[in-house]
Image (tube, rainbow, N blue to C red; front, side, top):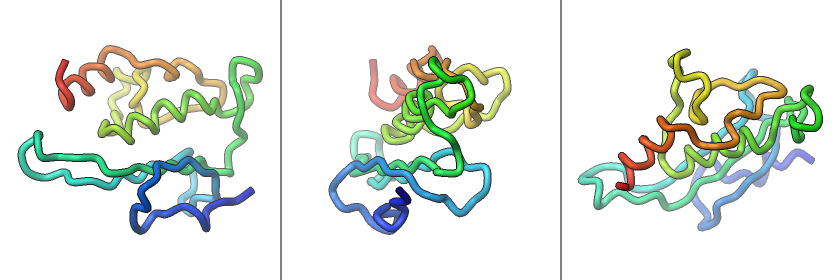
Amino acid sequence: TDTTANWDSDAPDGRNEFSSGNYPQSGVIAVTIVWGYFSGPPSMREIVEFDVMFDTDWTWGDATLDSTVMDLQNIATHELGHGVGLGDVYETACSEVTMYGYSNYGETQKRTLETPDITGLQTLYGK
């Protein structure tokens, strides 16, 4: 079911939501929109809400059972990283970290956080 019409990409509605839909840009696996207050000292910054949309151009499932699908848990973990303030990493030396900005069918190694992901969270929130 295409739920793009229900995806609140223009303004927050007080709920963190996960949906699926047809994202207009080709090649996009999923998108997270984060609303909050991001300027000023770190103690004043706040994430208010985030919403995630998984693009229906891809075949979704559990890649531990079927390597021809995009692993939902793999991508959801990455998108949740955006939801808590982490950005994409595009250095090929970091291709195994959760926040690496690319993925493939059958990939599952980004289901868990790696050291650089944890370091990023500790930088944002402390140890």
